[in-house]
Image (cartoon, rainbow, N blue to C red; front, side, top):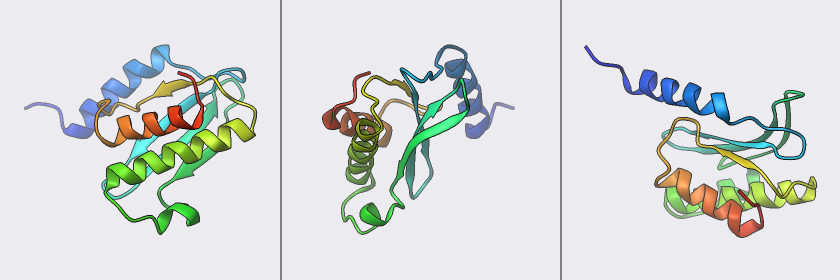
Length: 118
């Protein structure tokens, strides 16, 4: 019997995390995608701190209308603005084992529009 979808994602996630780490100068933009919501946070893996976080459950974004993909773009813009306020412009993108497609891709494009470089 094959792997479940979550086991497969976990293996891919572990493979990505071997190479992608976040530092103070270049934090990691970690993405988590649930069925209804999408979450993003900037992580400094050296100290284990979260620099900034945004999600589709934030008060300013939870009222946003549109498809889940459109909301993901707004979350990307939100995390980008919060990152620039925190003095971060260069990041590494951690797709968290998800395919770079759909909501994950639109979140990344929203973050790029906000001024993040990766």
